[in-house]
Length: 99
Image 1 (tube, one colour):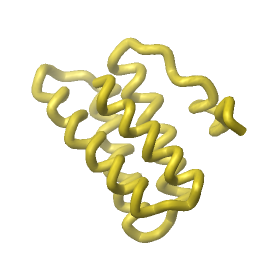
Image 2: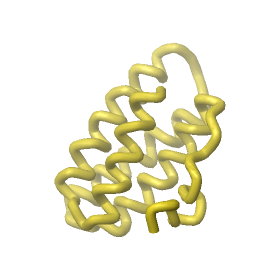
Image 3: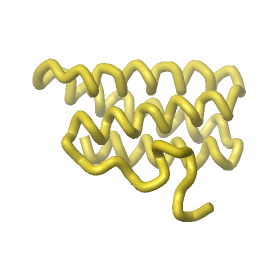
């Protein structure tokens, strides 16, 4: 899950820079890893994170980078919750410490 979360955060960062292709690349890696985690049991928050990743990929492929980035923030929140981790600072508000 940590690796999936890492790629989700990278995807969000790329999206904030308007880099749809890079966002999609990291979102797909995150999705693959999250799907692997799904095989280990039912977790509703993980499922919600997987759906959000799928939405982010779809929007990113359509060059809708702002929408894709919003979906990535939702995915990060759900992936963090599913793993019992603290939600990264700024994800819920869309603001990060780098802004």
